[in-house]
Length: 499
Ligand SMILES: Cc1cc2nc3c(=O)[nH]c(=O)nc-3n(C[C@H](O)[C@H](O)[C@H](O)COP(=O)(O)OP(=O)(O)OC[C@H]3O[C@@H](n4cnc5c(N)ncnc54)[C@H](O)[C@@H]3O)c2cc1C
Image 1 (cartoon, rainbow, N blue to C red):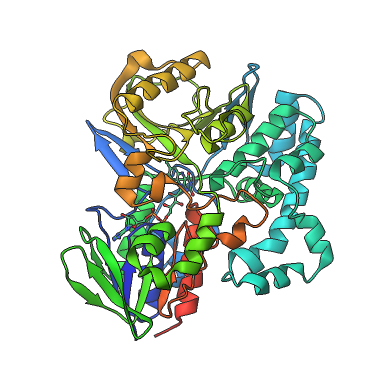
Image 2: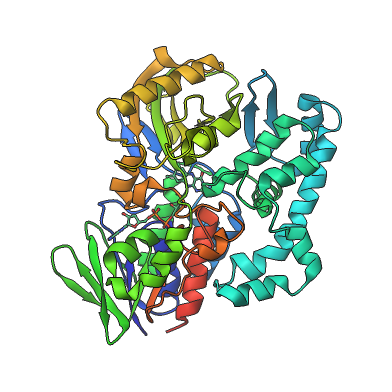
């Protein structure tokens, strides 16, 4: 049995804690904030409850595996609901597309909304994406990153390399299969699931669209934060100790091995194994001595950080007729959004809040989230540049957040969702808030982005250069988003091994 110290109680840290405790280790989780869950947070204001981060669960099998491996079926702890429709899209030309939650209904829905042939184009792309998924899921998503060995494993079959087409961007793949620009926009949006630019992210991200369509879009009744609570409870049941309000200020390295952590108040928690769920950029910049972190810092320096998000939590009076659980309001010019967020093209070197952004609204019809049946609690998200005072956007600049919130509400009104006279609660959360609350450097949601063919290989590995120190979570391999973060915990638990 090893003593394991887990830094951070985000979804990755909690899943690792549950698995390692179930494997017989003595696990202590140290979380800086007073709440567990990390970005999978919850905020309640005047009876309106809001998930502050994730609003969409994909690949439920990953959580089923986690719960099964740690003591009992997921259904004993959580009520997962498959959404149908999955999402309602509104395009700038006025077209509305309600994307069904069951795969068999998708082609007909696309033909009806976008014209004959759209369904067949999408189906052909999804068939390619399914093939990509089968090739990449095991060797990449469920396996530790091992540099050249990983590449060699993937390259063993030239036909597989041709299917993955690592040199093709997601945009390029869309242009090959989809003639309708609205369908291409829909595909492009999947790049943002990893905080990336579809013009630079690899085509293999089409697998995200496939996985969502094939395995469904899901909601956790009561709010997604319950997922964090349930995993925390599972970890505690297996014997893990969860300590909140404990910021780790350094990983203790003795004789070249991870030997524990030191807290902000000076307390040292000794351990045989340290698992870090902190943002990898923060771990390597602040928690380890520079001579032990030079190589991963160099790799991080070559990668583009993922985009951040600007969030509006709206408690509304009254109910909106015919509103889907998830709604996406697209702009006319999607490229302008990516240029503003990443500081490219017309915004070269100067990222800015997006003037005419895509707006994502999550409005769960869930009595647990509203004070009464004549109100709604909305989570509104737009892609945003990171918080980078001095170099990019300073989201703490006085007045900016509220001004930008007003402009997002105006954009929503212009696109047919005007709720301005119904607002009872309005909470604004900027990339700077995300950085303060979760320690994500610059408020990047997913660590490094997938921009560039080599991006996946620049992502920090789960085994650090320091023996006994492992990385879990969205800024490490295999990537961000709840399912991949949960898979990273599975990889780390395997690397540490049983007690
Ligand atoms: C607005 C938003 C929307 C999102 N939407 C979705 C979605 O719909 N679906 C989806 O799958 N994913 C979504 N995500 C992404 C998802 O939330 C993340 O991928 C996931 O939470 C990452 O988990 P993690 O464990 O790596 O890190 P985090 O959730 O960031 O947790 C890290 C934890 O470590 C703690 N910590 C950091 N440093 C220290 C330290 N030094 N000492 C002690 N504790 C420390 C932090 O306080 C935090 O609790 C969204 C994220 C955001 C912000």
